[in-house]
View 1: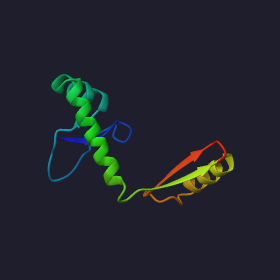
View 2 (view 1 turned 60 degrees about the vertical axis):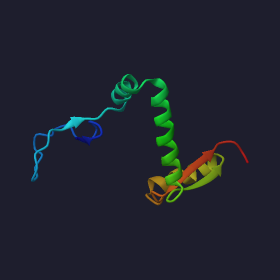
View 3 (view 1 turned 135 degrees about the vertical axis):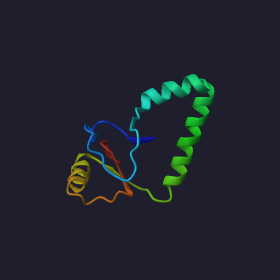
View 4 (view 1 turned 30 degrees about the vertical axis):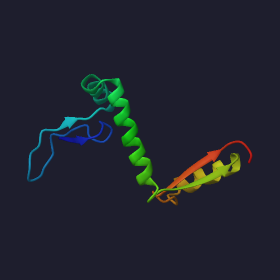
Length: 100
């Protein structure tokens, strides 16, 4: 069971409480990629990875909106809006530092 994505949030699991005691297993993407490459081979791995990425991209169109901005002032404005917690999780912001 993979329930910890990294050690940034869970350094000590000795105090875990709950109805069910589970054996925690660390999930580390590079290790999983190496395992899958050995298991599937590079061609099948690439095919499966592309399919998963394409499915994610298609699904994200239902909930993610992309806002494009240009220039240093827009970058600063967007950053300040972001750190002020005024950006929805459904909004993606892309800032091109070149002028339109």
